[in-house]
Image (cartoon, rainbow, N blue to C red; front, side):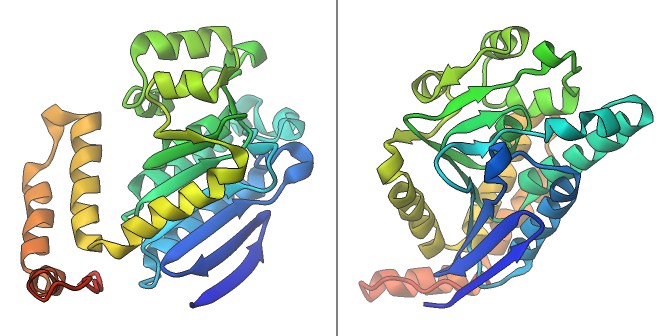
Amino acid sequence: MKFTMTDIDGFSVKTYDGICRITIENEHVRNALNRAMWQTLPRLIQAAADDEGVKVIILTGAGDKAFCAGADISEFEQTRTGDAALEYDRLNNEAFAALENCAKPIIAMINGFAFGGGFQIAACCDLRIASDGALFAIPAAKLGIGYNPRWIKTLLTLLSPADLKEILYTGARFNAYEMKDKGFLNHVTSTEALDELALSLAGAMALNAPLSIRASKLAIDALATAPENADLKKLDEAVTICFESDDYAEGRQAFMEKRAPKYTGK
């Protein structure tokens, strides 16, 4: 097992068996992200995307009280007023875009609160799994914050307009089972079983052909967000790359030899 671990600007990063686990380490404020952390998150995602040994990313929060409580409210006087608010939104946009555009699958492992920006971070991941004690909310209306339409666009790929209106208009908290019923979550399990479920899903993905997963991710994201503007030529090229890859040859050979394939992403 190849294992590395680093700590950087409010995050810890562990890499093992093709899985990169990024943990938000800010428990004393329920893993809220301050300005520096919003700047760091895109770099961590890009580093994992660039690492040939990484096949899947798990994003989670330290402890079992919170996945991420969103932006650090203690900074709002400096970051959410006047021109500074526009700059802060830009940092948020860059972080969300890094998650959405990552070529590798990202699993949000949600253990506790996922509020505001934490809710949006989870939405930008490919899969979302949660403990049965997790709670979800976007309290923008309670704080007088206008919710960015770019973020709403992402949420509308996961939630119905009616459900999203309820979430945004009320600012209410919703439990994991309610969010599963709304289609936001893939799985709900106990706190004790959450880590095992995340590793099971990530492990299954890590064994499969990366180019195939990438082609599927590109197509699903493009067709879910703007099907009328989807670049089908680009999506077709991603499929063609799969058929021309060493991994496709390996998959065929492994099938004939009745063994597990060993994919390299090439």
